[in-house]
Image (cartoon, rainbow, N blue to C red; front, side, top):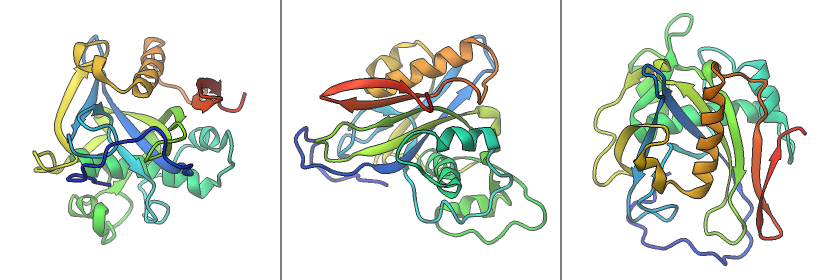
Length: 243
């Protein structure tokens, strides 16, 4: 999903564009008293949120529904993904969860997976790092934190599902992914509430606040309310999926 080198700036009055499905993964390290999240700083010349600290993510790819996985997504996660409108299929729900894992591996070099039963298949393209490590992507430890749709009138519009997973799920690291010409030029583990997170995009802040509330209650759960951020009448609305 790299747009490095494209100097076109995001506009506020583009013709209507239908949002495309996308997925974001927030990796959380809870080894210390204050949880840390992984953020990456985007290249200054990308179209969407240049120079901003973001969580890794991107649009759903055609391979995301077909790639074999080490374990299916939990039924409770699938149920959360099926909530809301427009309605999606279980296969699309699976693709969204798998897309979050793929994008995280592509953009950060951190891959969530585990060994499947038998020999790992010969995965190609963005999934090649998993094959080289003898792994299959594993979406079984993902939780849905929020859904958000980019406002109308933007050059890029995404219908994004924000997932989280514990850093202990990282099974493989690919070297050399982060560099000065990449989509993400820097990776940082930062404590929730610390200064580097103050410059996040407002919508990203909203999602992070939701995650912070979840973490404050203890263990992550699939039965927690999932907020849905969208724009209606020029104003941001916050609903609860399925309410």
